[in-house]
Length: 176
Image 1 (cartoon, one colour):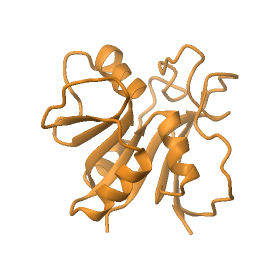
Image 2 (cartoon, helix red, strand yellow):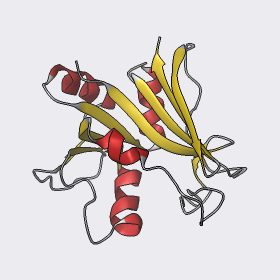
Image 3 (cartoon, one colour):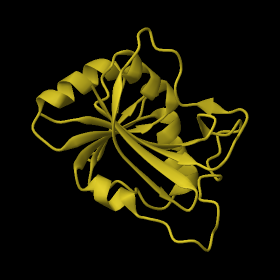
Image 4 (cartoon, one colour):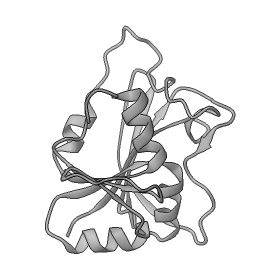
């Protein structure tokens, strides 16, 4: 069965964006130090991406305005905004929890939860995330968009692996 995987970076104090919504702080401690490309390994097991409107908007207007970076994947954007879908990008108002349950029943590779915080928090509260790939960036933001909110119940995780490079610590957890 397909897995639902959160692959995301956050500051040491748990934010995925600063108070202005910017992610320009997402880098290691030394620009000259080598980094490890864990994304290329991760993405081989993915064929579907799910994200909220703010994440989609940030990708298309700031991070990669000239090219859709997930062109080889099917992307679902959860939004109430009326947009025209394409073969690659499907805009939907469906409840993300129902959408995940529907996608997990279909054949395919894993489903990547790309962001944002609201979407992640809904899926965490429903305990629908199977694996958590979290890169902790060596930065304290102090405020911004928090990755995790309150969950109604405790969710127990199992540490699968850790890796560190350039001040970044990558943590991989699975549901117990």
